[in-house]
Every structure is written in structure tokens, then in C-alpha cells.
Picture 1 (cartoon, rainbow, N blue to C red):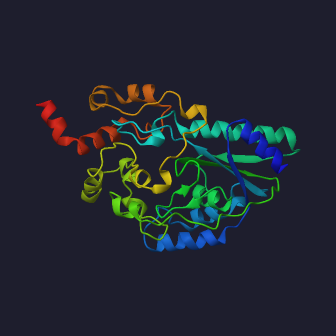
Picture 2 (picture 1 turned 90 degrees about the vertical axis):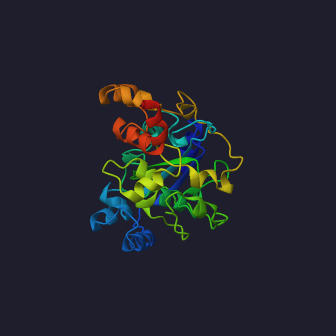
Picture 3 (picture 1 turned 120 degrees about the horizontal axis):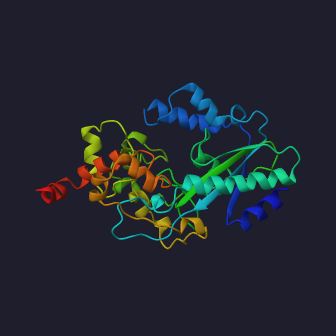
Length: 304
């Protein structure tokens, strides 16, 4: 059945699919404990940790986890002010549709098949799953890296009740050149394959609450108003990567949002235009704030 699954995934454009056991993932508990003890992770509650390492708490009859990678790289726009992952239509929608196609296919071919699919919104740690499924290896920047697409991949998974045979992790890491450590705007990459989440510039660009002075200084160190591609841009594993073969990530590309547009339209109009984009979920206010912080002098001179 595993070979049938792999062939079906290929037929819908998914080249990377692997299997992880149904846990518990006690080795990952140790990593989480290490990060939270240093105050570097957003995961603090014991209940959250348990759900991250124990699939049965999400699907009671879980017997394996199907993990898929979705490459999204489609080039770099010179004047972009949005992160590469946000160029296309919202990846949550695209990935979830693909995962449900897999789920429906398996329901048609396995009696009593049950699953829950997640696209960057589930309880388990996607990068850990991709590593355990043998789909890629860890970079110092905590990204999962592939030979064909570098780190430009989204990760989705299906917790399910079929005992697919688990795959094995790759026994390798990135080059550890530390370029990402040196160039990171927030100096959030700690050099031990973990990051200080709260200092990540991408996290700060999405922060709804009031920014600290440190947040503002980090934000000013790069021109993207949403996300941050620095650690990926400087990574040697991302040199000469292939562009995605998934057609949905090549359509309706948008690289930039102008300040004047954000200033003139209402929140309602912003959502009408961009509700199907990954950068829209925080509303227009966060993007406008980031624009003003990063380009304050330019915008002030224009206003005058």
C-alpha cells in the first residue's frame, strides 16, 4: 500500500512523501525542553508539548503519519517586499487541498481509513516530521533542506490509522558554513540547530502586538515588509535549486504591496483583495506598520 501511496502522490505533483511512526517522539521532547528552558520557544505549556510528540492525542487510533513536501520556489523578484513563500496564493489552501486528495484516495482504497490533515496549522512539528520521514536534513537555521529544492519547501502531514512502514532519517546535516548565523537580522540562529523564535525577523513582521525597540531595530535591517528570506538567500544549499513543478505555486504571483495602496484602502477592502494570500491573516495594519518602520524617511518625505 505504501508504493500505491507514493505513486498516487507523484500523479498529483508530490515528489517527496515519507512515513513517520505514530510516536511518541521522546527524542523531540528533549529538543523542546532544551529550547523552552532557554526561553527560545513559543511552546511553554506541558499540554502543548505532549500534543507535539503524541499523535494519538489528535487522532485516537493513529498508527502512522504521512508527511509530504511541497516545493514553492519560482524565482526571485528584484523589487519584492514580500517573502518568497508569500508570492503565490495561500500555501495553506494549496497544501490542504493536496493532502485531502491523498486522504480521499486512501479512503477509497483502504477500508475504514481515517485521517486528519494539517498544513502548518497542526499540533505536530512539521520540520521534525520531515526529518524523521527521511525527506530532508536539518540546517543550522532550523530549516529542512532537500537536494533538489533546497529549503524552499512547505510541509504537510496526515495523521492516520493505517500502519504504513516508517522511513528512516538521513544521517547528514547542512554544510554548517554559518553564513545564516552571521547574516541573520535578529541574530536568532543559535548555531546548534535551534533558533530564538522571538528574535526571528519573520516572526516580528507578523507580530500583532506593539513592537519593542529591539523588534523595530531588527525590522529595519531588511526591506521585506512580510517575512524574511535572509537565512535562505545566503544558504549554499539554495544555490541553483530547481523551480517547483507544482502548478498552483506558479500562478497569480504577487511580489509587492505598495504603501499607498495599504494607506488608502480599508481593512474590509484589503481582505476582499487578499484573503486568499498567506500575508493577509494579520490584516493590513501590520503590513502598513512594517512599511512605515522600514521606509519611514522615504514615506515621510513623500507625504510632505
